Length: 498
Ligand code: BG6
Image 1: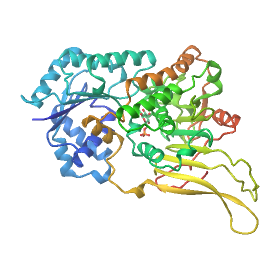
Image 2: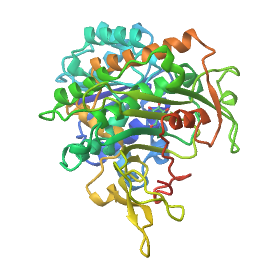
Image 3: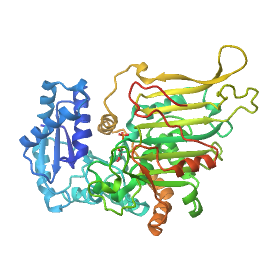
Image 4: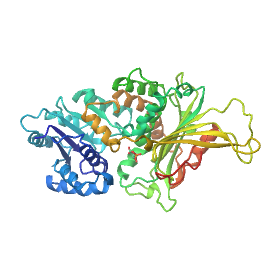
């Protein structure tokens, strides 16, 4: 009999086969999941336990890291899978879900259930209520909810109310998988385990900070979802702002779920609200058009010909507190860019006086610190040094550190880490209700403005380029510039431009 039952709503969907099953398997493989667990898929597609096992078994070989593909282990894992065909939007189907859970748990089951909501967001408000209606919101249960949590501030507040009426806050896990990335956590170690950077980490020494999370893919089969959401809700309101918080937060006195998440909320609360005047000057929205042999967004499956949904967004943010006053944070995200990269670039101020001059095309430049989250995770510091020979020709060089050098046993991807934390009842790396609300509070006026002003600028950019030229103009206007890494960055590439 199972002592832990993991119920996945949306079990026949994309996320389950791509991320959740490989993550659960990697926990099983590394013995983080004991033998007495059951995974119960609950979705509309019709499967039996047997046919669901066959389906997942096949997908495992597509989506599981090659190093983990051990046939015997996969077969063992698959034997823990069960399936319940049901429509999670129908309350009357939850009694039979309960029967199935009771059968899997047996007479001595203590209600240790982990629900994973990987459904379309419209169901996020219904499932907890229906679980409660049949008593499935047990004291021992936890619920993981995918992003976006809410569509705007109002809906996020309403959702939080529903969840808080059904579960205690410590049972609610709002997932943002960026926080599960090893290198996002390393940013905290980098900042708070090393004294050398702390004195420099403020407005006195930092000129501006860039946060980039771009991808070289389009929206694939997610047109129906994506067109309703857009880049701001999909990436900025959660992932990007989370990275800003990690770069900007104060160190908590002790590190635990409450103190860490308190500091994140303080950053969100300190974001300087943007006014309508800023919406055009400090925000650039874009949508990819055909280019580099790729189709444009409006030609993608499920996208209306006149869609004005943004697939790119660049913004200039400011944090109004003592540490950061006057330091712009430039953030950007986009689909169909030249490469996939997520990184934070810290631009230090120039030396107060420059005694060396440009020579043979080399000019002294301000130092940059690049914290790369993916791919080829690492840290790069740019320094100006003298080229050997006569005169003083200053050239920019890099000092690079590669995370691979650290060794250790990676736990698999971000989802494995986060699901494991949830099983261990550790909510530190999940978003608390007040953080979701604070983030929406900041972004809501922008979304409202776009809704009221559909004619607000939306710039086209050819697929495979670095976004609308207007985003370059926004930077140049403020004497800043984006750091674009090499095209087609791969795991072995070094920085081609600093
Ligand atoms: C998801 C977004 O949360 O993050 C996707 O919904 C995006 O649109 C993805 O592609 C990017 O995540 P990662 O881990 O691949 O950088």
